Amino acid sequence: MSAIPVSAIPMSAIPMSAIPMSAIPMSAMPMSAISAVIEPRAERSGARLARCSRGAGRGQSLSALRASDLRDRFYSWRGASGRNYVCSVFRLSDEALLTDFAHSLFIGVAREGAGRRPLCALASRDFGDAAGAILRAEAMAQGLSEWHVHFCADEAEVEDLVAGLAG
Image (cartoon, rainbow, N blue to C red):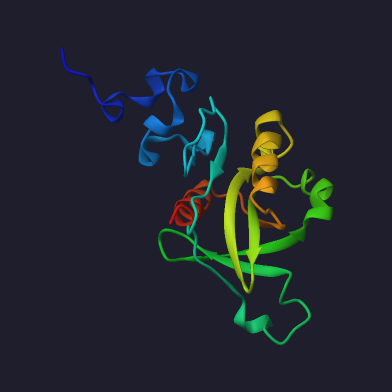
């Protein structure tokens, strides 16, 4: 008897908690799960979380703000489509404020010299829950230094940006 690949089974037929997130191809993952498990390390049953692998994500400061005092308050990350997504930058000390944001994607970022490296991504609805707290703690242990927030209500944008962060 041969095994049936997970991609051949309709995702609606299987409860998300029944399969390790690492076994699900990103193209088959429902957005309701931002199953952006970019670097799978642990099963996250139904979690809408993502870990970014080392070297992932392409971002840049906004050239229009290079000479402005606002240059450190905004950053642009490139989606898989090549589109740039502008994010507002928040210090770790502003983390309590972030729990009030809806329809947003939070990207945990480590500053490395002049560069920035994405560590994780969380949907706003998951930022304050238990799984989100675990992922935030893991990111902190990896050098989390700031949060980049993309305000959006469009799931296609979130999927594109998360796929871009995956590298």
